[in-house]
Image 1: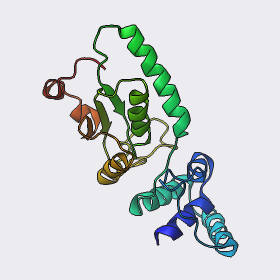
Image 2: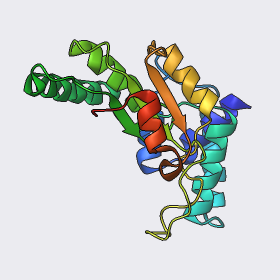
Image 3: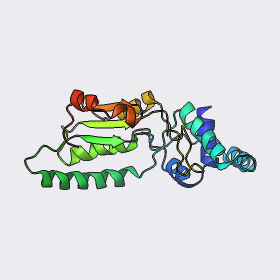
Image 4: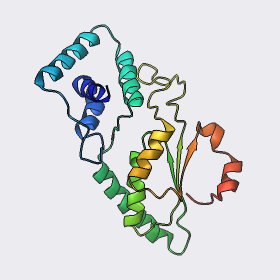
Length: 203
């Protein structure tokens, strides 16, 4: 079923999701499994087009996100190599400007499946900052209710399972001894108690 879900997503996705899946979904072996022949792909593409006549764009997104979460399909929204390189340049510049001052901790808001956190971990090592702690803040329940551009964004969108994200970090070699995922919405988790407990002084 997981392979069929991947095929269906590849056949029906458009825009950034299609690009993310085309990059191989970040699988260690260089890509998500590519099962099925031309006939099956054509059939799934036809099903997607047919369903698109009756589904709103939001409903289609919800189905796609349900498949991604149900079958834990990795999706890389950013080009990983480019992001890692840009972060390494930024960290090197920041470290030079900091001089003798502490570099601080890396704080990321909106982790999803952990792709950019993986890039940040690698970029910190490349910049010689492999003792920096990483904090990833995410609700792991998707977006909250919003009135901003409600036609595009919806509650629960971009949800990723906490354990799946943690597993992706582990598989990518992220040092979990100095990496922490903070689960919950920012207004509940980003508190003075957290600052004190974790010794957060500089970001």
